[in-house]
Amino acid sequence: MPEGQLTSTEVNKRVDTCLALRYSAERPMLQREWIAYCHEHYGDKSEQQYHYYWAKASARYTEGWKAKLEGMLDPAMQQLIELLYSEDEKVRQRAIDQIVKYTGNDVEKQEIDITVRQIETQWG
Image (tube, rainbow, N blue to C red):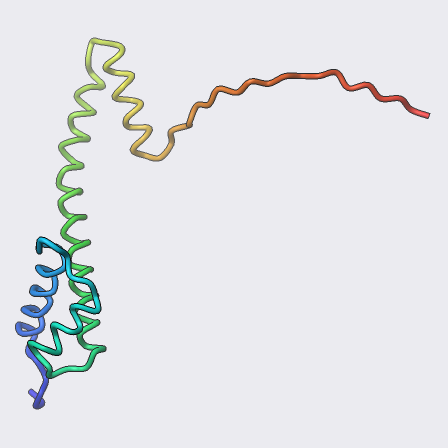
C-alpha cells in the first residue's frame, strides 16, 4: 500500500466517528467543526478527504433509516391487508384510505363555495 494511504478499515473507522459525532452526539457536529476535528485528530489528509468522510457518514445514516423504514413497511402492509377483511365496513374503508394514501393516489378534498352570476352581453 502506498505511503499515507489508509486501509478501508481505517477509513470506515473515521466515517463511523463522523457518523457518531453528527447523529449520536448530544449536540450534532457541524461540517466546519468536523473539518477542524479532523485537522486536530488526524491531520494527515486534505480537507477534500475529510469532506468525503462527512458525505459517507451522511449516506450511511440515510441507508440506515431507509432499512429501518422498509423493515416497518412490510408488517404495516400486512396489518392493512388483514384490516381489509374486517367485517366492519368503517374499518375496511379506513384501510383502503390508508393504502390509497401510501401509494400517493389520494385526492385532497376541498370545500368550495361557488357563486354563479348571470353575465349579459349585447351584440352589434
